Amino acid sequence: MPVTVKRVYDAPSRSDGKRLLVDRLWPRGLTKERAALDAWLRELAPSDELRKWYHAQPQSRATFRKRYLKELSKPEAAAALNQLYQLANGERQITLLFASKDETFNNAVVLKDLVDGLRKPPTGTGRRGSQAHRQSQAKRMPRPK
Image 1 (cartoon, rainbow, N blue to C red):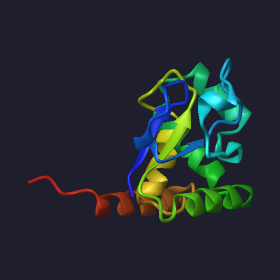
Image 2 (image 1 turned 90 degrees about the vertical axis):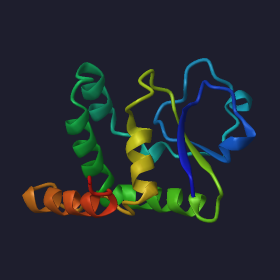
Image 3 (image 1 turned 120 degrees about the vertical axis):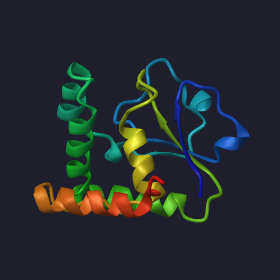
Image 4 (image 1 turned 45 degrees about the horizontal axis):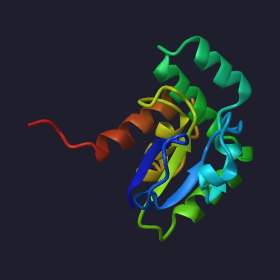
């Protein structure tokens, strides 16, 4: 099932499929009608602390990803992740919506990676957990010739 990411401010289209907002805060100046959401999964958004930290240090993408995945591995996030997987199950297309100005990297991009293949976040944050994550990534990526 294809998963795309898109700014919530962009006009909805039929090709979006199921539209899921994955931000904690409602986007400024946007009406519910214009957003055309199927669901708002605010529990999947990074914590306020992590979000503010990343806005202050946007060059720290790898660290943000690691910290965000650590947040998603907590039991509180399990129900929200299950809801995302249930909403995505059987759909031809889902679009994860975000409000960030950075369209190339944000929490929706990390969630897209989870839905695309890594079915649950790594449970360990130490060397063994990150090693297992790298190994699973290596299995999914084609080897250079």
